[in-house]
Image (cartoon, rainbow, N blue to C red; front, side, top):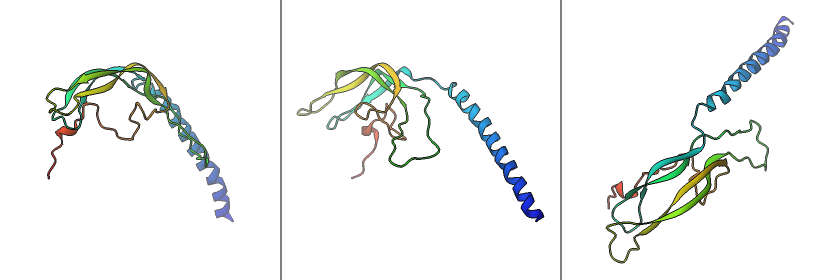
Length: 148
């Protein structure tokens, strides 16, 4: 009988310790988030390349980068959509560039986005790379050696 009594006392004690600890951890999470750079325009060098052209060409452009506050629910509800907010383009335009050293018969023109403004919103796959670990903007496929 004594063991049951201890179990009844320990459960509320452990629950209150857990809830107290989790609330103190979560109170720090938003504060830490404000130390990260917010979603904003930044200057970035990106590598332009095209299949058939031997070299990459670096250009300076503006991209969206930074932190967006978002939530991920603890309890997952079936058939409900949860969207994470990412730092993405609000307004952009496309610039055209002509790659040097492309062989005859290969169109040397490439277009790339130039961000005009940014916001935190759902990822638009047509203008953004929303993968977990994306390639760096200055990554160049031509720099990878291929062994035939």
